[in-house]
Length: 351
Image (cartoon, rainbow, N blue to C red; front, side, top):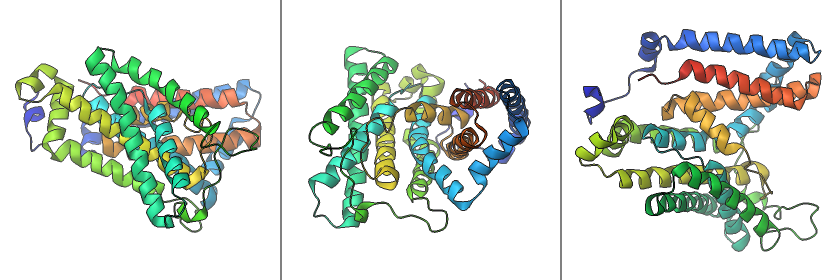
């Protein structure tokens, strides 16, 4: 273990120095080049023109202010959950429950709005987001209690609770939160007064701004606080952290509750900013994309910002490529996975 890992006042290296020292940027460029080659081969096998497909992908992601806004809206929940997961993974706490925590955040936000319709719009939106964060945190806390008190591995506990949360969304939408007479499970549309404000021209809601601020706060906690110092030491060596006086159980509680609150807030932002109602399965897959974001960001909360933007814009562009060129949806998924796999291989943390 390096001495710098045990210095409470340690500050993160400047990103430019890290890029130069570790050869980070060249590896990223090589990874992107390989992903383009693999994607081109797959598109050729599907009997489509790769140049037309890539042109459609770029236009779908950056072709207009509206498309950029769509990508930013897609990025928000990934960044909220991904920054929290980066903090967990940094200490060796493997939280795989973001799907469920995002779902619980959506439930909390929706229940708050529907239960108190008389609250003024801004106050209702703020209250709903706070409840969303609490709901996500409590759901993560349940997994933590199962892990610490019953000795169930956190991966298993968080993964299984994902299914419980998704089923709970179905249960509530088929009863107290559901819209009577709807063709599928959804809640009533929320009043416009509680929708998150949108940025003109680009038409994205302020959730991405909140997500960037949250990621910056998590980065500050990691690098500038005693808690963050304990997280970094625990990630290097749990015996060393215990010897230094840190409670591993306490760190686990704090990390899981924080990550759950971040994911729950992401779920609340998704509901108030984009969906404007709770919909069955709205959070499916978000948690695993958040894991990708955390890993792409090399477990650095600040770096999850560009990582989440990359995933959001890639998804938006790939969907446009599917619509315009007719690339099969399964192939789009394979191209996304191959791209992320190459990037992860290039950015993996080396001990």
